[in-house]
Image (cartoon, rainbow, N blue to C red; front, side, top):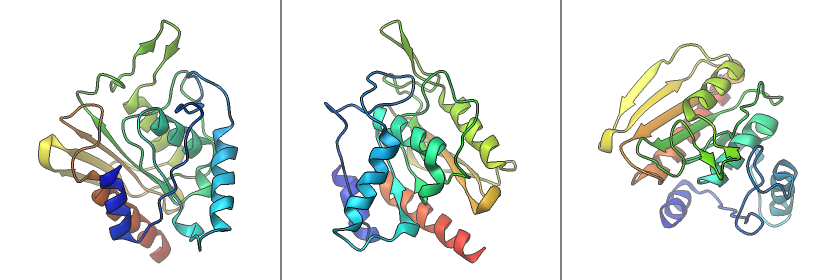
Length: 207
């Protein structure tokens, strides 16, 4: 959280960090199911707007682990309400959505290749619930955004490899980054994510 806070301060962004119920988020296909998180996120934004001068053209949603899966759900169901998403170590749960009712989504996602809590291929929880496949989840968004083939591939420390799709409907962009780590974000990840989101916003405005 400290690294995220520092990156937000440097980017001039306000962090709003609500809690899930009993530290859990209500994600489609996962336990528990206690709240409509799409409606909750919208209510949080409206409440924040009464307290601070919110720039609605730069509303970004993140989350870690199950919180990241919550961000994926919001991206699919109401992604056109937000400028971008930057989830860490989470994706859709099964059954994967057949389609997304929201408009094109801008997202940069990072995941450790050695993640055993949320493996890239997902896993079964308590013999009943099944985490989704990260690569399949991203392919759902790529098709939803009608993105062309990756234009950019970049590398970084600890085996970081990012594939970016910058020619998508509505000026949206997608980036999937994998690195040689576990259930966490790589060091100095959040400044990179903020820089990418800002660049995507500027490109969309210029376009």
